[in-house]
Length: 193
Image (cartoon, rainbow, N blue to C red; front, side, top):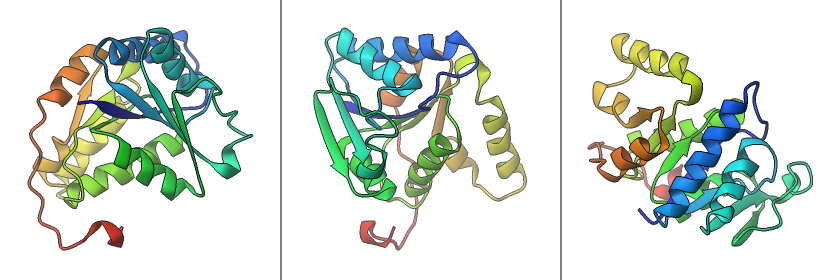
């Protein structure tokens, strides 16, 4: 893997552990020579992971919609910055630039980004690994929901396994590097999403 997209909050969260784990992920990415692709902000967990990659000598690509350019305070020290027109363009550009995806703690926007990419994987529009860094067990309710969806037969077991979950950045990336894509039957093409 040469690049990973990270979806995460533009807030810091209620505990310092969220920022600390974001920094550890950033350091791990830089040490492995993996470029960070993210939303482009300097705030919260987004800013922490970007700063950590840069401080550790790595590369960071930001993708920022123009209408959020001032609201989210675009990071000024990035290796590369793409300004796009919409949130959909942001996700599409991040997907194009990335070999995989990781969700860190965040709010509805983080989940929306993760689930769109997850759905694209279910539909066979990409075959890239999806990771969840379960910092402070933040995503335990989501993992339980995945099990519930499978038990209730709204999601196939093979798709539940698409989301790789771990509490430690290095282990998560190791598992993502060994990811075997799930076979999905679809009749959609990229331009139909």
